[in-house]
Image 1: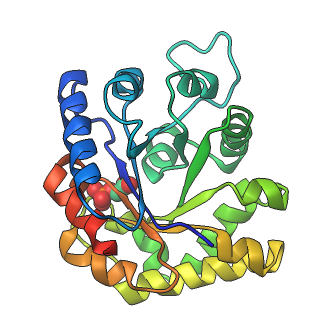
Image 2 (image 1 turned 30 degrees about the vertical axis):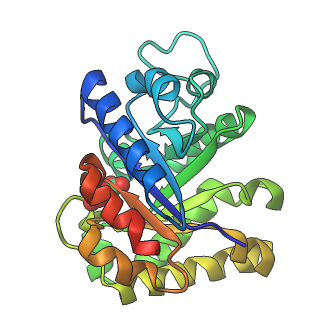
Length: 252
Ligand code: PGA
């Protein structure tokens, strides 16, 4: 059966020293707390190796927030999937709306990134979600379906089964405006149906679909209680250990 997962997305926050301290705090808190989910932190590239060495192998999964769409070579400033894997990280967020919006990521580049993640045994946390205009004009189901079809439906069932999806309505990210639990469940159930149509019920049932967008301790329990919401991808609230733990504990 699919896993419940709470994953932090630190984005471009914390210096190395601050990040190591936060990871140590979260690691200790997760270790000391009964939790019914996998807990992952996705952190800046510069922090990965140190956090891997110092803190996180006992209880926390560790991931990057992106990787390059090329294997290696003359791509100044890029960080490859192999480099990420060599730090000890085992997850990578791909297709975050901020990457799509500010850095022009398309389904085409994302297909390359997914392939490179798999080659390096990284588990993609693959983000999808509509912008406000698409929510308001009613095209949001089509938009999300197209994102999944275009970037992922060339995969074999076996490879698709390794993906974690994160539905993040862009209008809810960092805005304090969370999707209601019913809005999240409607979309998650729709996504599971889209997967079932292509890969069958077993693959669909086994795919973890996380919700992201202003998830916090006060709304996590209601969101995670929905049958098709298998956890969260947490931005702002993952930067404070107490808030992040409040969300982790929503599964108890
Ligand atoms: P947020 O971000 O929790 O700060 O809204 C979520 C995300 O972008 O992954």
